[in-house]
Length: 243
Ligand code: 6GU
Image (cartoon, rainbow, N blue to C red; front, side):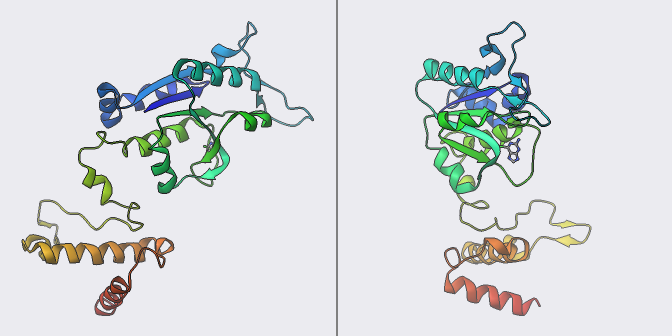
């Protein structure tokens, strides 16, 4: 996958994209990241990328020409890409969207700063994405969130496919509780069933506890689609026993 990032803060990405699994994926050539400095596409000697808003008001607006030229340049280098504008006004990101995007060959992430980009940018992008209902200083950290969430779904980036498949959200539920040594930490013990060696029972326990955890921490995630009648009665029984 080719990921192009258009930003006025190219250095922002240096360290995060040089760590851990993303770095390995880049080294292996599974992910190719190109960072473009929008300022390089300004045409005046001050390399201006923002200006005051028409109609007055506080703050500055990112000019459309340098952004447009940066987009065109990125596509000249790597071909047509799926152009995403990171903005708090975009569609809220979720695992389904992440999964969809992970199938694309080439995405272009446009990071906005200041009070936003000239509205006419909407004519030149494919989608606007927000990472949640709060306001960041710019789209850069949101671009990183996208890269991490998408990157780990690309085959070969995260160790085993299973560790991706089983975890929180892919199934619509939170992940079951995990433990490692020591068995007893300050009196808090690991559930004995996990030490029993009975794989059928362990599987069952994990299914119930994924459900219990979701019910307790994120009840908003439960719906008719991700909870079968069997699971419903198991949850009821568990809650009755542990009331
Ligand atoms: Cl993508 N950008 C900014 N500036 N703020 C945000 C956001 C994006 N997503 C949530 N808040």
